[in-house]
Length: 223
Image 1: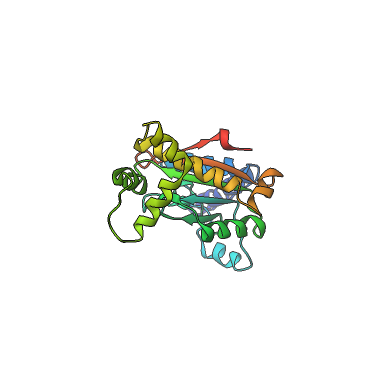
Image 2: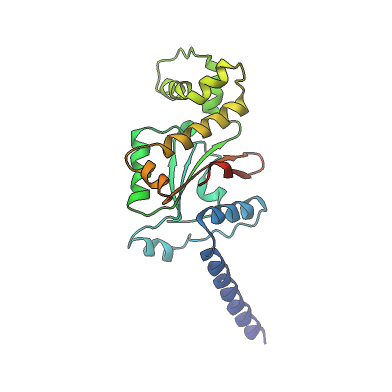
């Protein structure tokens, strides 16, 4: 009787897993990320696509459904935040989620050759890179490469506008940094602008709350 009960539970779990996968297949890339983040914040992650079988399957090729550009901060791992696994997210991470030629080329590759349909530029609350930019007040004295990150953020038109209007604060600067990243990708030639203009890819801004784990998407930046 006990063996029969265990067998039934095993079969039902397989059936339930199949239902979950089928439901996921009906979601858009953005909806997949939203659903995954809801599981994460509810403390009920399912940790999909983390098996050796999945790893071996990916040897044949990768087909991530989304690109996430986020900060290198150890508290902001995209795969965990969105409850995704191996081969699901093409992740680009730099301090302050700043982007130059190398990051842009990586994103172009994922869009053009891996057929990714969604790019998310995800900043986060209490970002150290943004705080360093604000605290430097345009005069970062150390001769290290962190200076390059701060100078990049300082050069963003969205940050300059805040400074000129005397509205520069950590939260507003983080929002401006995300806005800059979204606009940068939408207008990046020759690849991303064409893909965005022809509606082959969505480019969306988002902010992650490191205290609650919640990701809030800016749907106004979406196609």
